[in-house]
Image (cartoon, rainbow, N blue to C red; front, side):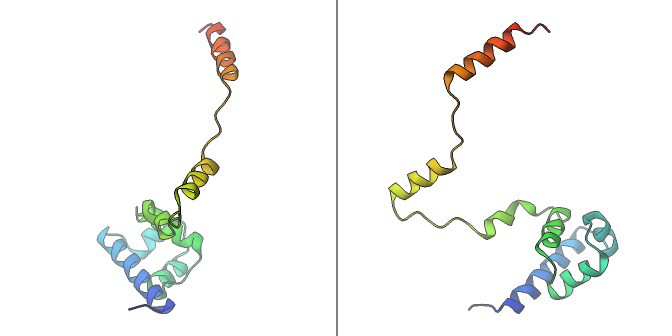
Length: 112
């Protein structure tokens, strides 16, 4: 069953509240720890409303920020060619060996 946006907001607000309570913090304490104004924190918990920045600040303060990026996973590649193209596009460029050798020479010439 699909949930409405309002139902998702309320569920998220309850989860934030439950996580805070499980960590033994008051709304005031977590508000100060997260940098989210108390009034906004109460809205996050009560209605699930706030900015994306406040949600991230809340996640960090409640120590559950590791899973934020999993909310929007990359779509699966349709083919091996597409997968390889994505990997090539996101790979860090390799430095030419001559640059690496030159740096190694400079480091070896520096006296401690």
